[in-house]
Image (cartoon, rainbow, N blue to C red; front, side):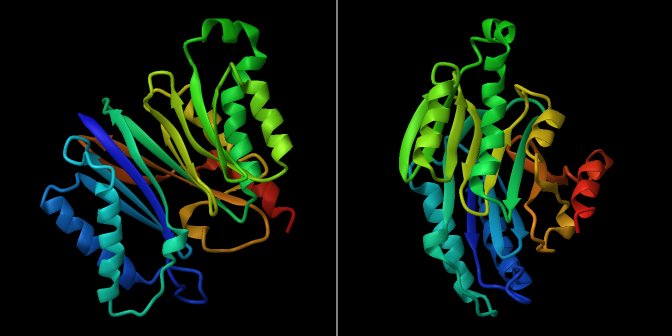
Amino acid sequence: MKIRLDLTKFEVSGYVDNASVHPAVIERLECFLSELVRNNEILDYNLLAISNTILLLISSNSESLKGADDIDQIIHNAMDNLKKCEYNFARDISGLKHFKNIYFSERKHESILIFISLNQNVLHYNFNILKMFMEPFSNIDLFKTELSKLYNINLSLKGHHKSYVQFKDVFKIIKDIKKSKSDFYIESIKDCKDEFMMASIEGYTASLWRVSEPFYNLNYILKGLTYKVLPSTLYDSSNFLAFPKSLAVGFSIQDGKLFGPVDLFDNSFFDVERNKFYKKF
């Protein structure tokens, strides 16, 4: 099956000291989106409420949504539907961030990971991601045997969008980042077959990975993204502390259905990293 995956992030006004999403808002969105599933307009969805930010993940059959604005319309209708909510709240349309048109052929045991960065400079978070794609270049033997593992890396630098090829432009990426003297964010990373690999949304950073056949194993990816960052679990994510934090959730996809989320950092493997941070306070 050809799957289309969309990731949307938007903020709503606070509930309890401006630090969480009101349950009535989630309930209203759940009612709207579940109706779309019943009518076969989308295959499945998942809502993640983190602080006062909502991450909306939608899977659909790519054949049924061919128009460029199809998902846009669904998302705006969902947000307009919130006006009927009994709880008065505000939403920031200008802050709506949307990754769309992510198509891939579904494979058996397909997995999707979402990483969310909290209280953190976008530059540091994204640079850890880029390091994973540049690292093979430092090993010439791996470089020679993995020439087919090319990635198109699309960055936004000071509002200007640039595209690179992993091995061909690896030093140019570093040069341009230093030259910009500003934060950057990764718009997307795709492999040479143009199948979805990774996307990122700036500000309260959200990164989406496809890992059914990862270039690196999962623990390597997770460890790389926790460098100088506290690997938080979902249940303590609302506790705003001074140091940078990151969340990781995982979904499996079967026939377009999203199974999860699984809290990937809720594992004793990351207790050592957590202890390092807690000892500082």
